[in-house]
Length: 154
Image (tube, rainbow, N blue to C red; front, side, top):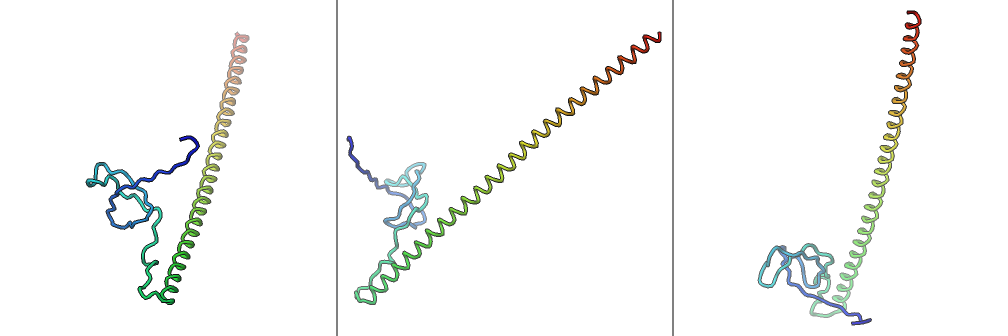
């Protein structure tokens, strides 16, 4: 279909071992190794978002102003709880992000130090190697001079 948008929905029968999920919950499912039953081929992995439970929506049969106020109060408490939970989740994400950044900075500093140490060790090895070559050259010169003196004396 050209320039048309369409949505697909799929309903799956999923095995919930703990019997925790309710109708309307958003969940992540995982495939089972084989069929769990005749129609079930998946397990609940985790609950992404719970659909509000019935205790927030119960209105007593005598639909009085008092029960409506109670319903609104319960619903208001539910919304406040959800907002608080979202704020805490965002704060936890920020904390985790800052902690990860701090750890990355520390690891970078350690890596830079290790690289600098390796460079200094390499330079030190070069210097000591050059010193050895100079000392060997000096020894050769001394031995040559000593040999020339011996030959002249003979």
